[in-house]
Image 1 (cartoon, rainbow, N blue to C red):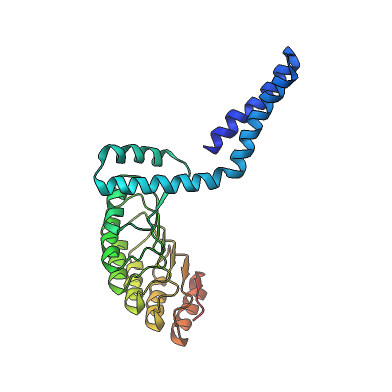
Image 2 (image 1 turned 90 degrees about the vertical axis):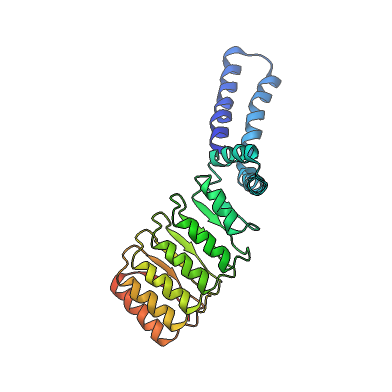
Length: 255
């Protein structure tokens, strides 16, 4: 990791300089002993994050393929590698259905799951919601820009009644509508761990906004709620403004 590189090679530079001062020897060798770790440090500093991102994506693709093919030995080896990395706390599945994501989550300790723009619909959302009922590690779920409708949102809402670890849910740019927002609002009456939820661009309308506002009068843990681009009218806006004034919540909505 980057931390190991800094510790090991950072210590080598002053050691090489000190050795040259005390023992003498060839200046060329001394310069090489200093330049090699410096070059490695510079490369790691400027390229580490980008390299880690690409390597992480490749490892995740290999893990998905191993689980899909039932290759247990390769799956276990990849899980050890991915789980041991400080940078890979989450998974991003651009082409994996929710059932497979559930299987992978059941094998690991990942805290984040991102499936943005993956064409996930209600059936896949329901499968993922089933996993959330018993999952105890996931804290961030990003399902932005998919095809989740009322049914999928209702399933996720039901999962929030039981899940005790998820803190952030992103459903921005889906199709949950008024019914989906009302179901999520009902879930907020029971959930005590979710702190942020983004429902922007879901056409929830006044009915959905009012249901969420009513839930925020009872829920004490949700702090941030994104509701912009939802065709919220005067009635919904008034309900949200009232709950913001009463509770100090951060609700973003622009109609």
